[in-house]
Length: 176
Image (cartoon, rainbow, N blue to C red; front, side):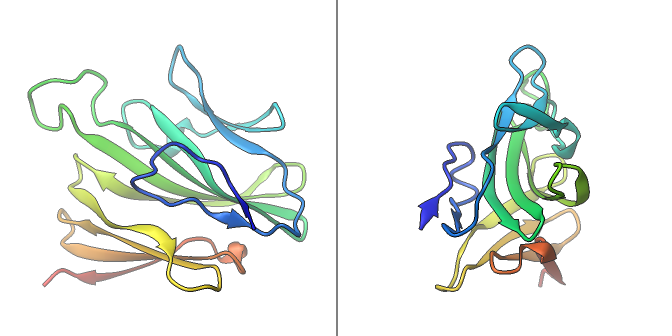
């Protein structure tokens, strides 16, 4: 098994293996130094601006967590986070963080076909990750969870590396 490299948000999401039998382009999430915009690259070619997918003041950590090719399409799961506010202060969420988990489906020319975006950690919206997205069995199925105290709901996340076209599954139930 080949492990996808990732350094950012290691505490929120685990590294994901890709099938060694699938040819994968090298995708990278790159943060522009001067304006903290987030771009997706494949083999040094800019594919798209991902900045709007993170609900933070600016992106300061991002990584491609999963990259797979199935048929003619590429499937990616990215994690991204940043501070709740552009300037840290001693007020509400002055040192807070906002983090998102994003699923992308791209065609062979890297055109975006579908996406989903999930806020999994947020000071402003009282969302807290409770279990990292990690393997729960030996078959490539992953699970994780987060809680929204604002909505009073507990969320379960799932991802099946054998069926990446299904995206990230999310279910919820009220908090008792």
